Amino acid sequence: MDVAAELLAAQEAYLANVPPWRTVARASAFIGAASKLLVLMPTTSGSREGNVSFNLELIQKQYDDATEWLEANGGGGGAGDNAVGTAANGGQPTRIVRASFVRFRD
Image (cartoon, rainbow, N blue to C red; front, side, top):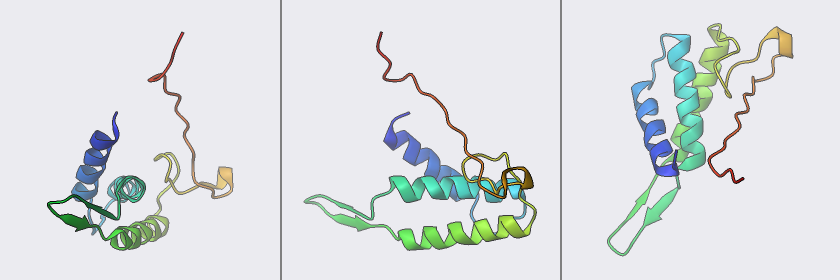
């Protein structure tokens, strides 16, 4: 998936799961989308025709709020990179590593 498509998917997931989170699944989906947006979105972008700025601090605050909500409402491991840890792994976030053969050569 190219960066533009990944950014668009993250934006759609972010907007589909904005607060208030009433389920662990929605909060987890929001956290995943917000973390991708924080990594992929530029703070400013522009050209000769105009400039635009993005408020990443707001996304970061919503990310922090969602993480706190998830911890307080029983979110458990298994939801991906941003999953709340379980007792089995010492409360650490679950990490999933996926191999990609997109740029694989013989």
